[in-house]
Image (cartoon, rainbow, N blue to C red; front, side, top):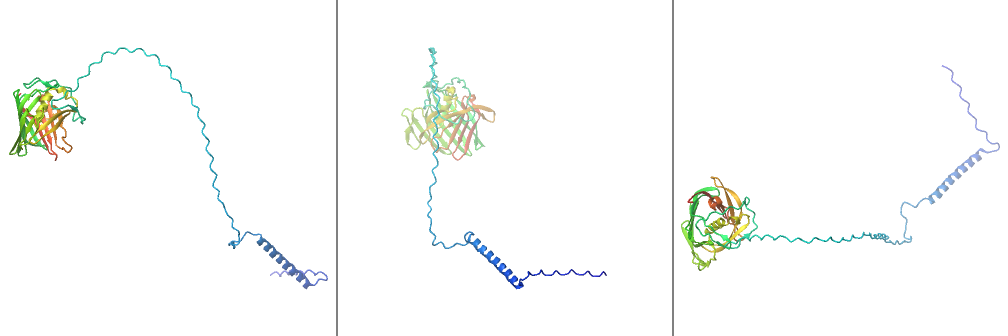
Length: 366
């Protein structure tokens, strides 16, 4: 092993100043240290005095209060007034050029004659729905058939020739025994009989009277329902009708009974086919049955095609208008020119919705 290195010799303390006592030197050193410490504390106290206020509130009871007065915000400045817009001067109208002298107009054509009035009442152009189909061109008037051919107030009545018309009968689409319309006239008098069956019940209606220039003049109207018969007697000279109950009521000129009114309409269409071209033409009647007399209006609603089961027939569709506000019974008739304007179809709709239809099947006679 190598021999250990000799240690470094210790440095001797610096020699004290000549004549100084070591204890005095140490005392002075402590005095300097204490003086420095006092100086640092003094500086710290001075710094605390200049620091911000305390973090906790101090007693402010003796602090004078300050009153604050809130002033309203200043009003916004008024918007500047719009400057008036200078309008351009309106152009002065130019003087009108001299008009040439008017020519003498040609004489205007005479106005068409007003729509004729039926002997039963004024004809009205009611605002109807137009019905089914559209109006067709006026048909040529048929040849006279032996009845009165005169006219009243421009309305011409043409009685149809005698014929017996057979009709298939349906109740709500279910076929029943056939019905018929028996029409007889000899130029001065007429007789109308209508028979039909609903289920196993037989209904028969008869109207008879005279033929006049204005059409039918009923004298007796009879209803047979099951085994019950009721009749009304009409005195056209006195203008009264006597019902089955014995009561009487006025019967004005031109009035009809419940079934003669349809043959009256047939004669009007035969004599004035050009009258029933535009839907809305309405005929007004007074109609009697076995109990009372009431107004009745029949309106033309259009021309349609009716399928009879044996072919299609062109016909004019008429509807009886409601007689009162709560009248829910609807009566319709279709008149065909090919049948001499006799009915090709009749339909009655009851208030409960039951429909009774008579559809043309064939005829006897001309």
